[in-house]
Structures are given as C-alpha cells and as structure tokens.
Length: 291
Length: 204
Image (cartoon, rainbow over all chains, first blue to last red; front, side, top):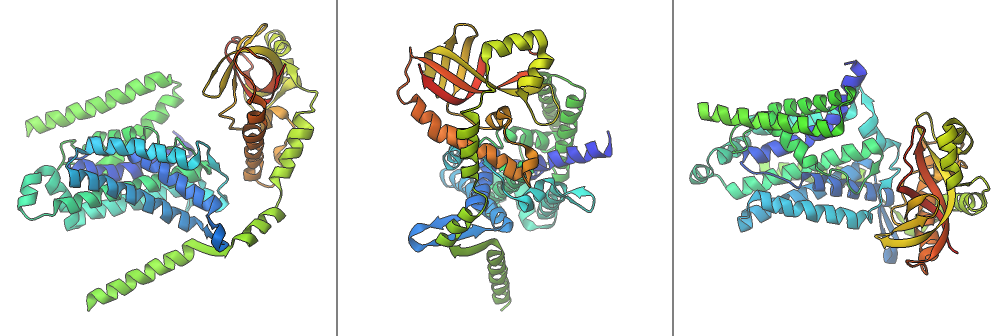
C-alpha cells in the first residue's frame, strides 16, 4: 500500500467514521439507527440546495444567500432535527428504535427525492469542494474533520456524565432509570448527535463529489453498523468504545480497498464483508458468554 | 451570575455564526447579476439547436454496430467521443423503430435491424449527450464546474423542453425516428438491450 493509497482509503472511510461514531452512541445505548443514510442524503441535499440557490422571497424582493459555513450549519441542523425526531418518536411512543428509524429511513429518502426532484445538485463551488477534496498539513481535509468528530465523541463518552449515562442506559435501562437518570433526555440527545454526525458525513460526501446526489447515503447505515460491531461494541448495549468503531471502519475501508485492488468481483466483496461482520458478532457473543 | 455569562457567550457565538453563514441581497439584483454572467442557457441552446440537431455526424445505429464488430478502432476513432483515456466512448446515433412498451418514461423500441432498444426519456442525466456530441471541449472552460454545467443545461433542455413536446402524442404502436447518445466499449460484443439517451424523437 502506497502513501497515496493510504490517504485515499482514509479519505474514503472518513464519511463512514463520522456516521459510525454517532451510531456507536446509539448502539451503546442498546438502540439502533437505520436512518443515518437517509439523514445524510437529505441534509446533504439541503446543504447543496442552499449553497447553490439560497432562499428567495419574491414578495419581499429578498434573497438570502448561504456561505459554505451556512450550508454546513444548515445541514447539521437538519441532521439534528431528524435525529431528535427519531429520539422523540422512540421515547414518546415507546416504539422500538429499529421500527422508528426504519420509518425515518423511508421518510428521509422520500423527502430527499422531493427536494431534489430526483436530480443531482451540482457545481457547489471550489470552496465547498475543498472540504472533501482538499489537503491541510499534508493530510486530507475529510480525515481532519472525522478526527475532530471522533475526538468530540471520545470526550463525550469518556469524560462526561452524559457519556456514563449512555453506558448505564445500555447496560441496564431499568437500573439507570431507578438511579435517577433522565433516560428520555439522554436518548433524545444521542439520536440528535447521531443525526448531526450523519449530516457531517453528508457534507463530506457532497463536497467530495461537488454534487448532492438524491441517492447519497443509500445503505450507509449497514456499513456504519458493521464498523460499530467489528469495532467491538455490543449490540445489546453498554459495552464498546468509539476508538474500537474507528478501527472497525478502518478494517472495512481497507477490506474494501484491498478487495478492489485484488480485482475481486463486487459480488464476492459483499460476501466477504458479510462474513467479517458475522465473525465479529459471533466473537462478541462468545466473549459475553465467557464473562 | 455565571449562567448569564454563559448565555451571553452562546448568543455571541450564534450571532457570529449567523453573520458568517448568510448574506442578504435584493432578489432583483441577484437575478440581474445572473443575467450578466456567462449565459449557459444561450450557449447550450446554440449547442443543441445549431449543433446537435443539425449535426451530420450522427451515425446510423446499424452501421455503428457493424463497424464496431469489424473494426472497433476505426469506429471509436471516427465516431466515438470521450474525455481522457478509457475503453469506452459515447456515440451520437440515429435509428428508427416501433414502440411496443412505455414504462416509467422508458420507451421500448423494436428496431427491425438492431433488436430491442430502450429510450430513456425521464432520467436524462450525466454527460452522455455533451460528450457524444463532441461539440464541447473541456479546454473552452475555465473550470470543471463550468464544463459540467454545460451537461446540466443541455440535459435540462432535452429533458424539460424537447422530449415532453416530442412524446406528447406518441403512443404504443407508433413508429418513430430518434437520435441520441449511447455508450459502447471497445471490446463490446453484445449489442442487445441498448439504452439510448435521446437528443431528439420524431413521429414517423
């Protein structure tokens, strides 16, 4: 593997890293978020739409333009809103996360198609393109961004009471409730964070392509769940680390890259990835039994 | 007391982010400025109506297929257009056929000589038409974005203006003449189920 290839792999996995660190928080809480791919797609589309066309108010003769920063913030706000909506549905109506986020998966995809009319939003300008394709201090910008996201979530999980609450809820929700943790509030926040992380991933994908694709993020939820599981986070919650997830994402990225370089058929690539995920879950289960 | 400072700090940060995120202009001024910039619509109108529609470089699909089968190098050199290197190229073709199915914007054509051909009238995206036409050069533009915008505008004209008018009266059973872009590989030996991105469709 050459250094160019290494940077390419890291650049590619930075999107999955961003989504996966958010997913880690959800899984640590014994939840799941199937909607991250759709949230990524919608927030990316809105970011691109605002950057390109801004907001026009004919009656007021007013045009509100968005800078790159404005587009990114808008995307993050959309991601957060959708994530919070997931959390609200899950906590308010006691709907299993699997079902609630599955619904959001289709809602988000549908909204993306409606917003973009099924047409990519392209040519978003060199400044925005720099985020996905540029270099800073010899390292691709997306790698820096994903690193910052990882550090924030590592700090949240390891150094804050909020992080301990997540582990406590995942370990034993009832016990966490009895010890006075506001479970609904923590869940809302975690799904909100997962939404923001997906939106950041969306910004990276869009800027790399300099275009927001209506089908961006499709099936990304599977790759992020795979990274979380391979990274050692237990699907039953309470056990796992963000750094483990990053390693999981790197394993998937290197695996993808290696299989492509070895000219393995894309169909076999899927099989291999599936087997790796299965092995990770089996190892996790065996570890749990041994404990 | 501490809380007040935190609130003030948060408000200041939000205000700063807001200031750096959006800008306000008169909508009329923005529209006028857009008119003064390079007019892609006019440029692409000229490429489409004066270039693509009047081009005599379109090759009959039957001729192209037989040429690719016998001498693919010559077929690619004389009729293919592509950016950079690669084993595939876009071709501007023309043919005729009878419609026997219309589904989700895809017209299925029975072409006597070439079998089944699909004409996609809905998802006209990408650079197929621009590249197949061979009329637009990357070097004519300052940035890749401008070059790509030509494709976008060209596709818009065909998808939103040309095709809807053309297919308004067309129904299953009608015979049509069509031209458009297809993509072929140098080592292609199967010419079944060809998908054409149309540039023009006419009722015969």
